[in-house]
Length: 206
Image (cartoon, rainbow, N blue to C red; front, side, top):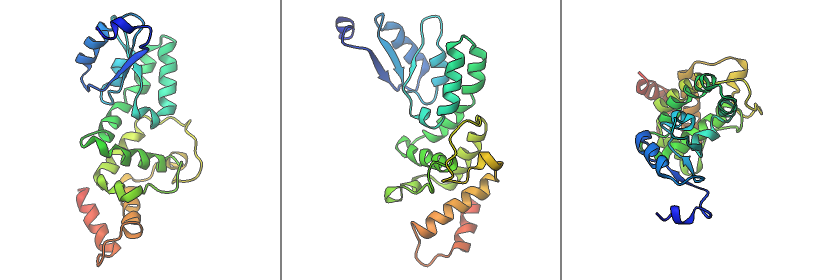
């Protein structure tokens, strides 16, 4: 009722219900002209595409990571080519679910890791060592999932390994090297050498 009585002042609402059924029902109840902005990083592809009752607008953290492919997908959707839209955007959902999995507050580790992989920065270390909030197995999974949707239109500035320019490296090797470089130079463990840590990290990935 509050929105219905103030439609001139409400452009839309943002929700992150992580349940497409509930979001569709809430969207259906919105007054005409009031938009639904989805923050559902688990089900966004189907919610943005919409159905007979309407569609949600994207206001998502994952869009920062998949901007090139998201832009291409949304252009296809705007042109009425829903099949091409799904083909582009659907593969990104698994990556988003991994990055934003519980505890969700640690999603930034995946964001910084992909920024490094895409050459936007020289490392994926974070203030207070928060990259350690996720383990190496998570970064391997993020790496593997990011390969499933990649299209060659992201900026490559030379900061990171630019793996999509020169061919994809072995994901385990890349993550182990990056993780060990961080742990031995940014977050050193007293009395533990790199060789010992490499064995420990690889065990985690088995």
